[in-house]
Amino acid sequence: MIGNEAGTARFWDKRAATYDKTEADNEQLHSAIVDRSLGFLGSDDVALDYGCGTGALSYRLAPHVKALHGMDISKRMIDTARDRADLEHVEGLRFSAGSIFDDAFEPDSFDVIITSQVLHVMSNGDEALDRIHGLVKPGGWFLSTTPCMHEGQSVMKLANRALSVASAVRAIPYMKFSTGPDLERSISEAGFEIHETADLPFDQRPDMRYVFARFVAARKIH
Ligand SMILES: C[S@@+](CC[C@H](N)C(=O)[O-])C[C@H]1O[C@@H](n2cnc3c(N)ncnc32)[C@H](O)[C@@H]1O
View 1 (tube, rainbow, N blue to C red):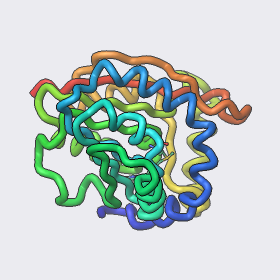
View 2: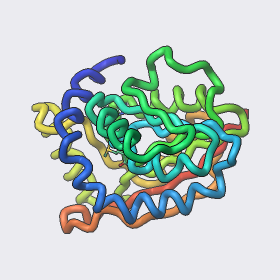
View 3: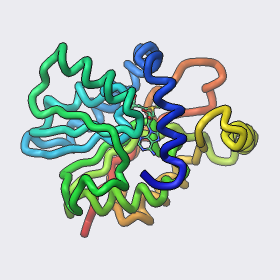
View 4: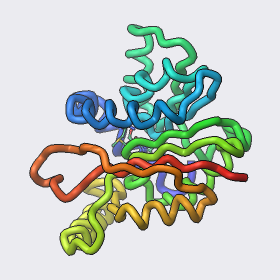
């Protein structure tokens, strides 16, 4: 782990017991991610679902690839994902707790890396994108779905300021909303070529009405 990843892990560990309850909210989003992702997944692919949480999306994607590794910084999230694995056996699916910055993976290890609702809670998002780029095989895919806010919204600036104060006093972990274009610029700067984007349905709570989930399919060219 690097930087404050241990603190981040502690925060999400505390959320793990109740996170599954929000899965009902995530159901529509996860269905949309699966639909969008199918065109980029192959039956011989080895995939990583990074920041997989309790594995709800991993379970839905795993049948479409040869092997899927769900990884999360929170051990408790992974424990929950594994409990489910004991109940439903899905071929080729495994989970581990850890960080993408650990030595667990060789460069060019994955045909596809997926992140769902993760990049906006990573304070080292640009470094993570560089690392993801290093772990995807040339010609492989990065499929990211990230909560974003519309460009120029003053509410976004206010929200980000409030989030940064809350995370400074450790009330919440790091969280920051980008615009779709800013997110895509970061993904391109990491060396990916943007192939497809879409805005997906997100959390229906009134306080989340300015937020949408940006799906980006990006290819590693070399
Ligand atoms: C909002 S949840 C999303 C979970 C899942 N991907 C989904 O779509 O339901 C964010 C997840 O990211 C994980 N996370 C946060 N920071 C992380 C980091 N630096 N490395 C790996 N996982 C991280 C958290 O533990 C949590 O499980």
